[in-house]
Amino acid sequence: MQPLLFFYLNPKGNMLLLIFLQLLYTGAAAEMPCVTVPGKLRQLDAGSGEVYGVSDDRSVYFWHSNRWEQIKGNYLHVTVGPAGVWAVNNLNRVYRLQNFEWMQLSGRLKQIDAGGDMFLVGVDSKESIYCLNQESVKGTALSYMEVEGRLKYYSCGPLGCWGVNDAYETYYQKNVTQTSCQGVGSMRVQGSLAMVEVGTDGSVFAVDPNGKVYRRKGISPKKPTGTTWEELDLYDNFKHVSYDAGFLWLIAENGSIIKCAYPESILPSVL
Image (cartoon, rainbow, N blue to C red; front, side):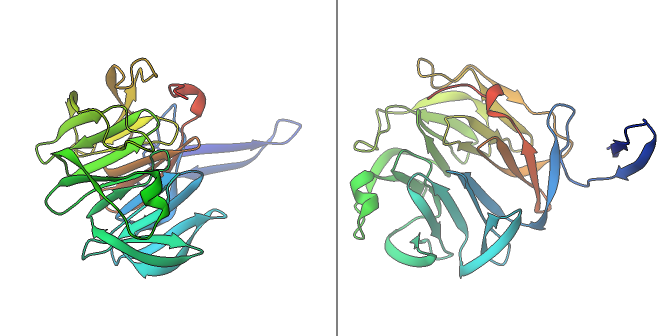
């Protein structure tokens, strides 16, 4: 990877500063400026203007004032979105963050997603899919609705939910709402993926089994599944991706955290 060059010119046009800055594992691309964020994580989630992540030792962090701030807790997976901040631990127990205190709730999930419109989804150790509608999310005694199918990763947004199974097959479920979070069936979508994340604006990003990152093109209210997968021009392999508020967050294979400016103007307008 070639070094990035930054120049500063004074009013007379004389070059005052030339900095050669090699950014390892940035995933920098010609049309997508990226930076390496300090620290390493195993998983992260961006949504509703916030970013939370989990490290290899299961510590939980949130992004604040351009740095990671640790909060108490020991979890395997964390999510943030319109339904709030949630996490699951190594025993698959479910927790919700309230006033920076974790409250244990009923249920067992291994992966969880709060990106839906005030509803929560997740999968358990048997890869069964579950959903909590708006009323269930507000309470403490959770009433899970099982969703048809088997998936290892499930994520929702304003136009529906996306998921992948152990065979890297990709699925989409439409008409998922606050009150009827089971939706109306699921349909197979072309693509072999390891994980897929839906942004709170409806954009969809994914990582394939080889660590390549993709954006789903052509998403609209009339065609919520979009048209094709577009591979992003990144100089590294990744294991996790999340998007929110004009920024793409990625985790490289070695745990390095990459933040890329990805303007909303070039994303599909779905809301």
